[in-house]
Length: 77
Image 1 (cartoon, one colour):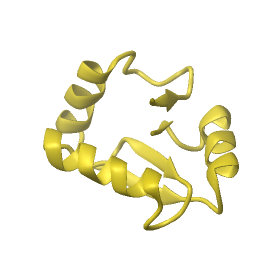
Image 2 (tube, rainbow, N blue to C red; image 1 turned 90 degrees about the horizontal axis):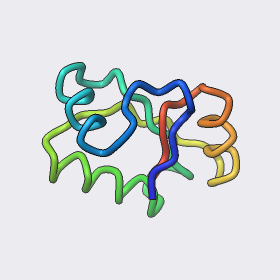
Image 3 (cartoon, one colour; image 1 turned 90 degrees about the vertical axis):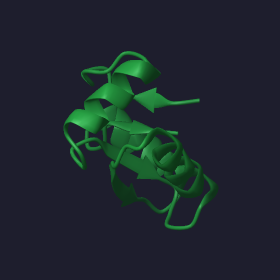
Image 4 (cartoon, rainbow, N blue to C red; image 1 turned 30 degrees about the horizontal axis):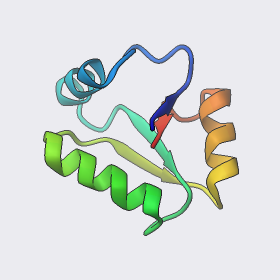
């Protein structure tokens, strides 16, 4: 599952891939910490799709989700 801030330009996975490929490292994704399941699964998504996003680790999944809701990060897997 992917959650995104309501103002994020991409509204589906295809649009996310196109946006991230067009503007590498401008899509910011939150994770529940470096090396967490969220971080690793997003890294696998990047590898599989050829995109590069900016990783911002938080101290747990709740702070990460709050960051997405507040618009500090664009999305979280």
